[in-house]
Each structure stands twice: as C-alpha cells, then as structure tokens.
Amino acid sequence: MVAEFDYEELLKATGNFSPSRLIGKGSHGSVYAAKFIIRNNESLIVAVKKPQQILHGHDHHARTDDSNLENEIRVLSALPENPHIIKLLGTSHDSARNCRLLVMEFMPNGSLHDLLHVAETPPSWSKRVETVLQIAKAVRSLHGGVVAVPPHHQPYSVIVHRDIKSENVLFDSDWVAKLADFGLAVALDDVDSASDGPGPGQVPAAAGTIGYLDPCYTAPSKLSTKNDVFSFGVLVLEIVSGRKVMDVSRSWTSLAEWAAPLIRERRLDEIYDTRVPSPDGDVAVGSTVRELLYVAASCVSLEEDCRPSMSDVVGGMLGRLVRVDRFPIWMTSFLRGVMLVRIKRRKKLAKRWRQIKCDEAPIIECRQGVTQYGDDHDVPKRNRFTLRELLLAG
Ligand SMILES: Nc1ncnc2c1ncn2[C@@H]1O[C@H](COP(=O)(O)OP(=O)(O)OP(=O)(O)O)[C@@H](O)[C@H]1O
Image (cartoon, rainbow, N blue to C red):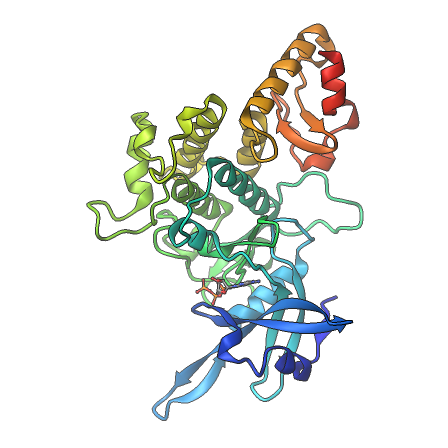
C-alpha cells in the first residue's frame, strides 16, 4: 500500500515547486526537494518527481506526459525494500493537471555521474569497488536473483530496469549507492512476449540510453535481463576508467567498443582512471580492479549467451573481491592471511570460505565453490568470525 501525500502540503514543502528547490531534471520529469518540519524545528527532506509538461498540437496546449512516472510508481511500489534501490515513500495527486507525483527518499550526495565526471576529487578505488558491488546487488535483486526472500515478502516478478547508467545511481547521506529512475523498467510477468507494441500487457518498444544500450536489443522481443547486464558492464567500465560512455571528441565513441579489445589483450592499465594513482600500487586493490574489468568485459560481450547473470556477477565478486572500505589494505590482507592459516588447521572449513566479520562489520567476503548467493545476513552464523576470534586463533 503506497502512502498518499496531501498535494497542498507538497506545494508548501516545495515552495510551490520553486526553481530554487529543483534538484534535477530528466527527460520525463523534474525532481524537487520538499522540506517538512516534523517537530521542534526538526525537518525531513524528501524528493518529489513531477511529470513533464509537453506542448501538443497546433495551438501548443500543454499536456502532462505521465506514462513514465506512472510506470515508475507501479514498479517501485511492487518491489520489496532493498538497501540499494531508491525508496518510494508515497504518491500525491495534482488534481489540476490530473496526474500523480512520486515522493521518494532524498539523495543528498548527487549522482555517480557527477562524482565521476564533475566532482573536483575523483573517487578512490575502494569507493569505486564498493559502488560496483552495491549496484550489482541492486540489479541482481531486480532480476530475481535473491534466493533468500524474507518471509514477509512475496516473491516478485523479474524486472528489467532498461536504463542503468551513472546518472541513475544516486548517493544517500552515507554515500551508499542506490539505483533510481524506474521510468523505463518492465516487469517481465506483466508483458506478453508474443505481442510487440504499445499498450498494457504488450512488450514496449526498445529503449534505453545511447552508450549503455545493448546492441543486441534491436527489437521489442529482444527484451531480457541480459540488456541490463550489458548496461551494467558499461557502467563498470565508466567507473574504472573515469571516462564518459560516449565521447565524440575521441577516435572511439563508445566506451565498450574501446575497452573490450584492451581487456582481451590484457592492457588493463590503459583503462584505469589516470586521475588517481594506479590500483596496481597495492596488490589487493590491483587484483580487485582487474577482476572488475574482466567482469565488465563478459557483461558487454556481443554474444548474449556469454554474458553472466547478475547472480553470477555478485557471487563472483563476493567470492574474489576484497572490500577495502572499512579498514586499511594491510589489515584486510593480514586478516586474509590469518584466515588461511585457520582454514589449513581446520579441514572442515577448507571448502567453505564464507565471510570474516569484524565486530559485526563484514570486511572480507570470500566464497569458493559455493552457489548460494545472498546478502550478509544470509551467511550462516558458524562461518562468521569476529576480529577478536581471529586474533585469538592466530
Ligand atoms: N531521490 C532523489 N534525490 C535527489 N536527486 C534526485 C532524486 N531522484 C532524481 N534526482 C535527480 O534528478 C535527476 C532526474 O531524475 P530522473 O533521472 O529520475 O528523471 P527522468 O526524467 O526519469 O530522467 P531520464 O531522462 O534519465 O529518464 C537525476 O539525474 C538526479 O540528479
């Protein structure tokens, strides 16, 4: 059940949708910050998305184009909560324009696009790795890859986002990345793959953003989760290289076309973002970033069947990547060493690397030959270790 916000209150909270409250504009709508005073001068800021007005006919009368926004509301309200997917807070009805508005959590730290291409300080390698993993988890959950669905959630349809790009990855106040803009998303259960064309229940026309768009998605009937896997691969290349996905000022125009041959020839250092020191300066970070590029190369393969599923991507990353965000690299490497020693001693654990927990904060997630995927809470307790336990076991 989606909460209903009073339109008059939204008007007040956005200063009548004042331009000073405008935080972003897309091709389908404008997003405003709405400030509510809750109690004792405490305020809560939410983001409100309003559909675009388009000029229509000879007399150029304004008409509201709310089809994308209605689609976004439908998809977001059907999704279970996920820490890496933008949270829908509710809707509101503008009776004058006869359209609905979407109210969602406010993401104060802007988009990944701005962090990569506009911010003065480019992100560290650890931030990049963390963001890739968070987005991979978000897309995996859309594709239905989460095997352990909490009991209060209904199983849900496979959803293809169709517009995965750095502009649609937003950061919350803790710099956690979340996937946003579900205007083009399609629930595969809702469409009849036998019938192309506009209208409810029919497969929508192919759509997406140039540069991220899967070249195999040439007709409505080619709609599949593999389209998102391709866009995700491009996004990873963008994150590692710090380059824009389309750049007409260069000899190449598409990032995927430029990077894929370099990865095949193992010329990975030519792809790294040169604004930050090479990741190869640290063994753990270097191998992690190289791993990301191999994942990206398989995602942007022109053979759809060669692309991994998002479950494979997340599982592979959890199995091989070292999370370097919470502790210095030397500490994660040290803990990895300690864990290896313990594994040798305890044959029982040898085949089942899972996760090292440090005072309940996961720092290394390792899974080998294990096909069960899921978030941190899915990992059985007996395979968790605290820092104290590891040091005592040393
Ligand atoms: N919850 C939010 N918090 C903060 N800023 C946001 C939020 N949602 C969107 N924005 C900003 O508004 C911009 C436009 O939003 P969005 O991409 O959802 O609109 P759109 O019309 O669907 O875009 P597109 O042209 O990609 O279809 C985003 O790029 C982002 O900068």
